[in-house]
Length: 194
Image 1 (spheres, one colour):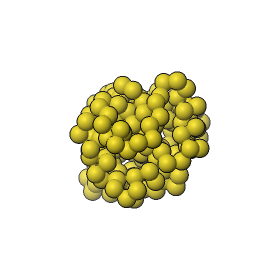
Image 2: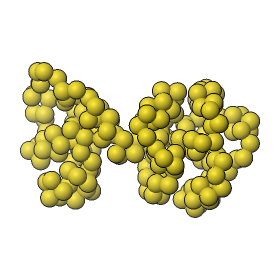
Image 3: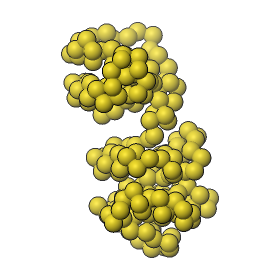
């Protein structure tokens, strides 16, 4: 899939282009953007000019994957653009590895949110009155500890600090947890365990 960049902010376009090197195309015409098919489109939220829903739905109808980036991201806007069909939402100036992670996650058929937003959404999920403790029986002792912290909304970094392990080790445990529990991400883990 081609990566297409669209923004009303030349500085953002320059930043995104550097992140994707020569693997991306920049468009500056909204009608040309709407004619794309089967592309990953990275768009700045302010470029919508108040018709977000229509543009997102049009791009979705053509089998595009849309990552909406915002200079001042917030959970309300995240929920809004995701409800319209965007496959990702985050900070317009996030680090290059987050940009690449977002694109890869969307290509795998999942939704991508900046980790802090995922944590915020997880914390909004109410706890169940009765918990099924057998759900974690297939996990190792360390995986159980990681799972219980992740379900409460902790990031990989925060879990690592609490368990005195690296975020990379937490991520490896998390991937094992997701595989064993047949889920895809932290949000699904929270929904399963809360």
